[in-house]
Image (cartoon, rainbow, N blue to C red; front, side, top):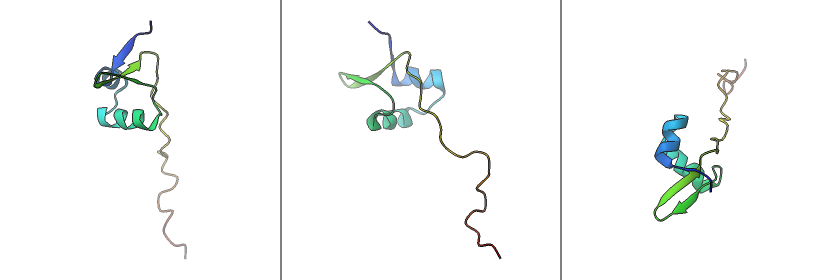
Length: 66
């Protein structure tokens, strides 16, 4: 049987927000099972990649060029 983590344990391990993790579970982006009223996540599951642009490449993209 595989080891499982609660949402709070998963968040502490990966440095994520519990509300955000629950939202990702609802969207199906993190595999999880519901046991009773609590979500459990397989211990070997990794959080999805962060797809935000952090390079600053698009700063000022909405400004009109003159």
